[in-house]
Image (cartoon, rainbow, N blue to C red; front, side):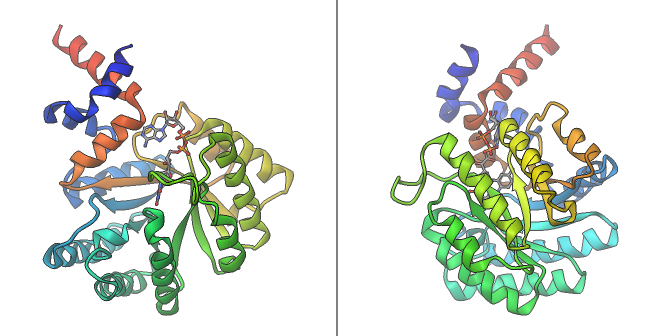
Length: 299
Ligand SMILES: Cc1cc2nc3c(=O)[nH]c(=O)nc-3n(C[C@H](O)[C@H](O)[C@H](O)COP(=O)(O)OP(=O)(O)OC[C@H]3O[C@@H](n4cnc5c(N)ncnc54)[C@H](O)[C@@H]3O)c2cc1C
């Protein structure tokens, strides 16, 4: 009941409450804070990917500021010998301004990734930007091959995208997809999305591509493990990925014990508010825990 009520009241929750909640999902506001959290995750056996929160930037100066922050992050990751790459939303560094701006900014960041022998992941946003994101990806790949993209299992086109892009040099995260899409482009039935996710994972393996299985869905993780075992998929050709702070009830440690790589996606930055609201809508259970802790601490 409490959680249902919280889910409905997400849009009007007070900012202080969202901030309390955000502590479990957002790794602080500064690069210093996020680097200390990813170090802890590394010590527990997890790889990480760092993301600066924010999207749909329309101001050129802000897009350039974020670009510089990403460049600096590669340097700090290298200096601190941290096991982390970087994930970036194209609209955060200029996609909404122009194709030229976003490509220029990606090229600057990629130069740093190359300088420090790191990896760059381009996050996937709504289906309006799928084609342009693949175009950018293909262009960046010409500069530095350690670049990857994301495929959304709810999109009807995704298997075809693997057919055309898949090769030993292709690295993609597979996730269900988070944006509101219409049924012309996206599968709506949750079970069919799972089935498509598994088909995509299998096709990635047949294409000898590197696949990142990004999901918290325990059934799907179980099905992926079965698939890996049944087809004896080499553990150097895939990894599991989760978002920082999502409760996984020991599943991540189990994956590590099976010898699989697990990467945690760790977001940080002052733009924590919108991100936290989205997390709250997705999992009101967490809001319930925060509230209970809050009251038990005060009683
Ligand atoms: C590492 C990573 C990177 C991602 N990158 C992208 C991207 O580039 N583009 C994109 O469109 N989407 C991205 N996503 C989001 C993804 O598409 C899904 O929307 C999200 O992961 C929920 O789907 P699920 O597979 O976890 O299954 P679900 O069935 O939605 O969730 C399974 C269970 O996990 C819990 N859960 C799931 N997600 C959350 C959450 N965020 N907060 C709290 N609890 C949660 C819920 O309690 C739910 O019961 C990413 C997800 C991950 C893990």
